[in-house]
Length: 108
Image (cartoon, rainbow, N blue to C red; front, side, top):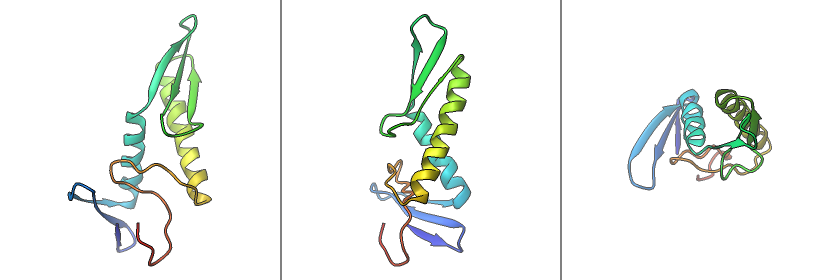
């Protein structure tokens, strides 16, 4: 991973493919990839939905509608990511996107 002009991130994926993201779109793509892994269930009497993202411990939501559950899940995911990144805790690598904070000179 190479950061170009403090705004762009150039990635070489394990497959050898290369991708370039600006920092804003990199986070958007990461959220999209994580939400694509989401699993939803209709609870008990069919009046509430439960959602979680496998591999993201503690990222879960419950709401009256599927859309409300999805919105709550993405909000929870955003908070979870900000918390973990701010404390330099591990986050899953998705689609070659590694959001871990590295010091200058450290390899990804």
